[in-house]
Length: 206
Image 1: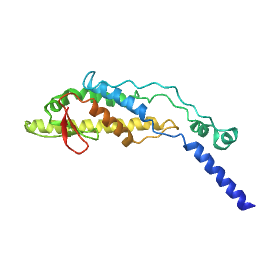
Image 2: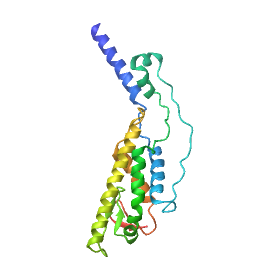
Image 3: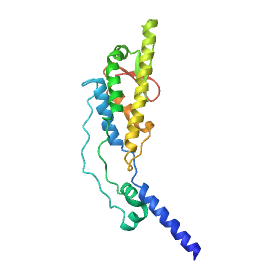
Image 4: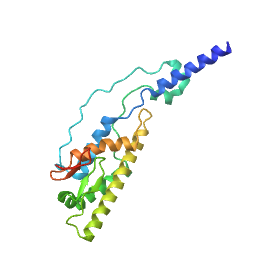
């Protein structure tokens, strides 16, 4: 009898765990929309391709947990099991605004190197020094400093966005997941004449 009771208890725990975690997801479309807006803001209107407006759809609502499950898991955890789509990601926190402002201010210094092809956009969305041709010693140092500073800010941005996503118990995100989506936006909105790294490691001019 005790053994059967233990088995039943374990089954209930597994059922509750499944209900709690089944709807925790990575909001890829929301991140893509945020990435397009941020890249467009940092590089300016008309820099590359205009980001497409996300298709609006009605939020999907799945049945919430039964009263029995609510009693077991409590109100806060039961909310995570409801599967209701949350609001857009908050990209206006003080930290994110400060990072965006720093990158936007740096864009003017980066453009000459991007236009000349000395700096390119890597397949991971980070900047790379492609060539030092045509640069004197001072220019080489400046190019590398700009690349380092920009990449540090981009990685900080991804961490902040992942942190904001994680505040919603229905969602999960890692900085690497955010970076993968931002990489597409940086590359697709690159201006004509800029170099973008292809998947095979070769550089192609837009």
